Length: 253
Ligand code: SF4
Image (tube, rainbow, N blue to C red; front, side, top):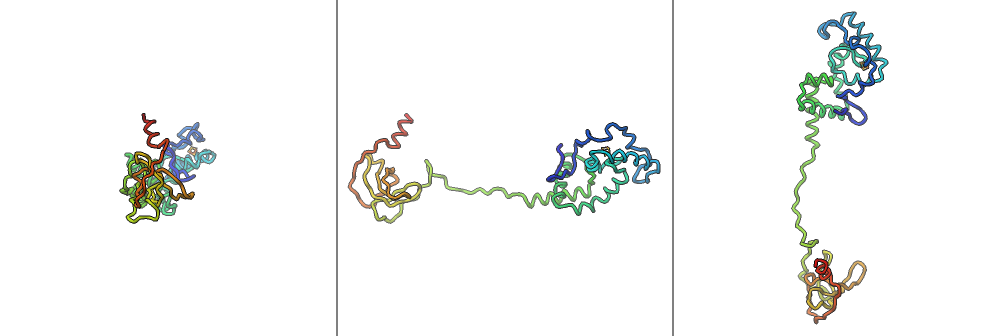
């Protein structure tokens, strides 16, 4: 499991990667787990407290004291991160109050993580041992996260029915019902343009027209289905060598 973080701040590291750098790794665990009354029901004896204080001296020179203290809040017994059982117990009992002052991002990040732990099959006893957060505060943080997630969820994408493009590309506009000032309406690049008729190929498949383009007047061949001649014109046969449809046919062949 990776450390849980918001921005630069690590909330807790479930795998405790810092252990390999701990000062106590070569010290007997008996130094940190001192026999004595079972706290918190019974206060520690003087001997137990003295034992804890000795262990804390090792912690105070430990390079991972901060990380250890962050991740051991839920530990019930022994000295961890320079804190004894009683000190950690008191921090845990005040955790709900302290959590009220946490930034919203921190509360939500904890809520999200606790939800994952809870839904991952961990009991609250186990979660508290890992994080120091018990069921009451934990459920509160989870509720905040679930509410936030519902409010900020993106609505499902709407399906928009768009007309399918005509075969071969663009949706072609219909010819206007009224004549223009020249000879024919020409449908070109998805627009209707008034144009002069100049002739056509022998089979009538292509019409030569003069029309206005963005670069001025232009003479072009246009497919006959894209031309509507509205003033009768004498048919003029013109040669169109290298017709686009013939090129396609010859390539296909
Ligand atoms: S802070 Fe103390 S208990 Fe924690 S790793 Fe360091 S020496 Fe061990």
